[in-house]
Image 1 (spheres, rainbow, N blue to C red):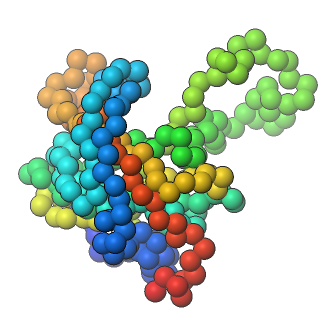
Image 2: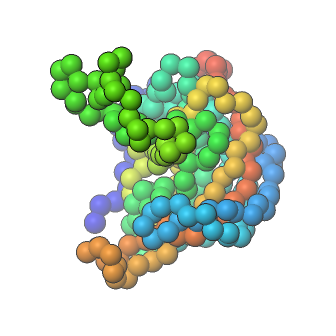
Length: 253
């Protein structure tokens, strides 16, 4: 099996130092994070779609470990920064990160994407949505029916438009800003779960949700067997956000 590569940075040291300085902090930020218990209105179905059902979540308390499938996760803080490692936002936006200590408590290496699937993007805080047509080559002169001469679509009314899909987090190791892929058993990793956030968003806390990971021995829907599946909402709470935008490299050292 593959093992985590926490050494040998795959990006420049200068870029690595930026993400370390942007998301690393002392305990004062952690102490400012309030704990809360909020009634959750959504949960994840086995098909991955959000269903409006009532669920009750335990609180996320900064500095206190929670059990998420094969992981013990300790949420530390949330920060905004101009750039995080190799991740650079679109003009006018910034990067947003939730920093956590993570321990794989199982006996085998686990993908960081498994943990990422249990931490959906915070809603209603300006997280930039996925463009479903990004990278789609529609051919020369084809504007996908959105040009000035396009006929209006009867099915494109605003009332019927679907909610934009929010992306999964990009996950980096905090210590060197390299991409976190494999989490080995018994090792404590400090990671940052990162999204792009709109520069128009203003606030000092975000609602963080963590889903339960359930082990699936044998799937009745797919050919895959033996995997972790995000299911019901398990933890929820407000997380204070520290604004590190505009910090120079000299100020970060």
